[in-house]
Length: 181
Picture 1 (tube, rainbow, N blue to C red):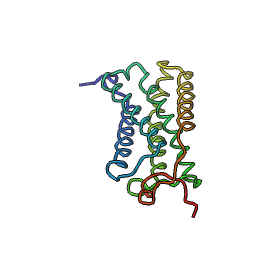
Picture 2: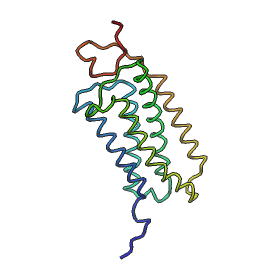
Picture 3: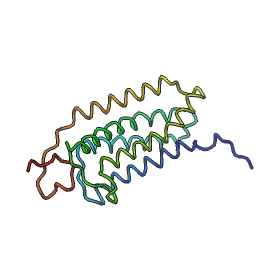
């Protein structure tokens, strides 16, 4: 029995959904399982990861993926979260922030967040390219999502309060400024 290829979501959309679910689960595990305290940049990234996951779940469950907009709608918060994660990682790598080790101590929490957003965007990209080729969406819409995602990220970054040096007993569990001595 042959099945209609339009009867199930495209593989890139499903892959992005799985990547977003793993990202959200990992983010929650950092706080709830490992007891880490999320800084404002972490919270922004978590919110955008939840947005990506929500859009993809609704898009798959309602079969909205057939119209070509689900990948585009998930792309915008993925770009915003990815830009914030890249900035957060930059602060961590340059020593302006000291972020705690992530899950299984593979990199820092900021680096793991950046990796998850890169994976989500990489999963969404083939679906977006397909939707543009099929004329379901325009390349201008993709460019608009990139610019708007960047603008959202910029707004989050510039409005984020500066990190404070936390009390000694929790310094290992939150992103903080390097100590002076």
